Amino acid sequence: MKALVKREPAKGIWMERVPVPTPGPNEVLIKLEKTAICGTDLHIYKWDEWSQRTIKPGLVIGHEFVGRIVAMGPGVTGYKEGDRVSAEGHIVCGHCRNCRAGRQHLCPNTVGIGVNRHGAFAEYIVMPASNLWPIPDEIPSELAAFFDPFGNAAHCALEFDVVGEDVLITGAGPIGIIAAGLVKHIGARHVVITDVNDYRLNLAKDMGATRTVNVARENIHDVMKEIGIEGFDVGLEMSGHPVAFNDMLDAMYHGGKIALLGILPKGSGVDWDRIIFKGLTVQGIYGRKMYETWYKMTQLVRGGFPLHKVLTHQIHIDDFQQGFDLMDAGQCGKVVCSWD
Ligand code: NAD
Ligand code: ZN
Image (cartoon, rainbow, N blue to C red; front, side):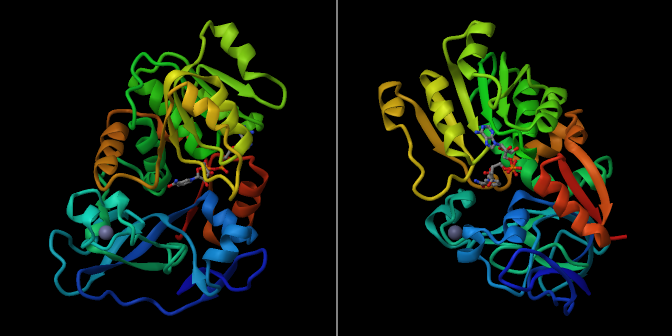
């Protein structure tokens, strides 16, 4: 089968022929319909410091996908061939304290597809049946393909009560854009989002942000004066940039709550005084809640949440290079690749 493989320990990604995997007990074989490009795939493509210490060359990358079940290993129940599914890409151990307590998103033994084992930029992928998420007929495949990052946004947006609250989001990548839409949809008052990229800030505005701030030109404190607030009640850090995180700590109201999703570079300086003297809560967020976030996402889209607004490019998988170039340039929301 065709697959996008991280062949060389260098910048790039290679389309290669690899064997079709075989489903073992309690696993299914999925024929991919669509795979979306994640910021993580771009990190692996660029072979940055994180990728160099995490990825073993020879890996099939990708974890945002939708497809159909075409074969099942022994023991699978509740599914049949032809079912259209996405899947949680974090495979948990099932026997640690957190897994057994129903807190699988906190499993210390998590294995990620497309990072620690072969992923979804391939014609076929094998997944444990317990990770599948069935997609209702009314949700189109081009949206189901990126439930994974939608889930990161939803996990953050639902972590704290945002109804009537003033929310600051730093970073208008695809996840920040979706989060801006979500918190407004749920009932936040001011939804301010920052970035240095006007294309993406415009997408966030269209999605529901009430004020966009290009921090290369504008100061967040001027914006706070303009809208008449002393500080933000809830912060969602979605840039992975230490300057943005410290801007956020500075702009939070006393007692504010922060969901920290963006992955900061090792050794990033944090202004601890702001956290202490303002009594801030900082909650690290990893992945999605299994499977409550998936449930909420599905019902949000069914209920009319305009997830499609962040989908800017649909390309054929053979044009993958164009997709990675778009992501690298930041001139896109979500980029979804089709296998047929
Ligand atoms: P992305 O890289 O596409 O978006 C980040 C955005 O931040 C970019 O648009 C960039 O221009 C912007 N930015 C850069 N400097 C900024 C600054 N000083 N102020 C404001 N914005 C700035 O990333 P994404 O795919 O949307 O993901 C968001 C973040 O979440 C990334 O750091 C990613 O690594 C991380 N992430 C974490 C998890 C998790 O489970 N914790 C999962 C997925 C992604
Ligand atoms: Zn576990």
